[in-house]
Image (cartoon, rainbow, N blue to C red; front, top):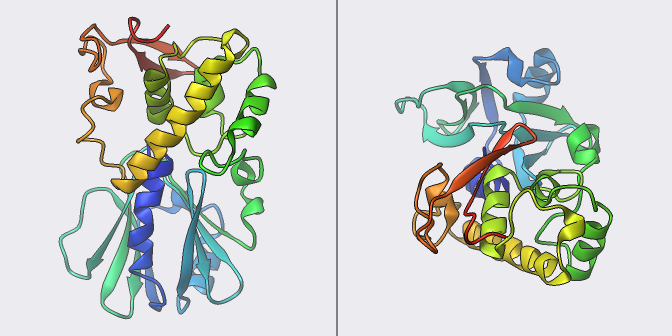
Length: 259
């Protein structure tokens, strides 16, 4: 699933489209559109992308006309590509924005869980309205205070809850806890102050590294991200990676390195 670093890595695709007039909207799957398709066509054709931002796992594109924002949510398998019209398409293209300059922005989604919103303010998107602070904008003191408000939550579900901290999902919460040496099912009330601080610092370090590399973690041989499968060898101690189900998601961890 695209998480905070992946959504940051999508920004350049939008930046290539900035100030290019939208000529046509090719809709392959109506399920992507939260707002009416008729309204999408009316407000987008002839419009321009003015600048792009991110909130949590959402990409937000400000449109020049109508004071509107186009909001992308990428679901489990969402992706973007920007190509010259006529270039062979990727599989699972669901929506295509055609621009007057002869290029197109393609929205790709194999599992079709992505969504497109057209709103006046981002608070009209319920998930964004209820979202917690950005993990790279919050300070250590505030993070520790938030930790203390959720004593009965497991640390994994705490990190993944968008209403508590925005942008982390299954992968990067697993990586944060691996680097911090904390089991995913440990309760927040059982964490020491040192463990909470370590989680905060590792979370920020991991996200910053991933943003710098455009979410390419292939070069980080000490990251659990490369070994998220049961029975794989832990990159730190060589022991077996194990998994457990939490909140209908599979968590991967090393029982030797994470206590």
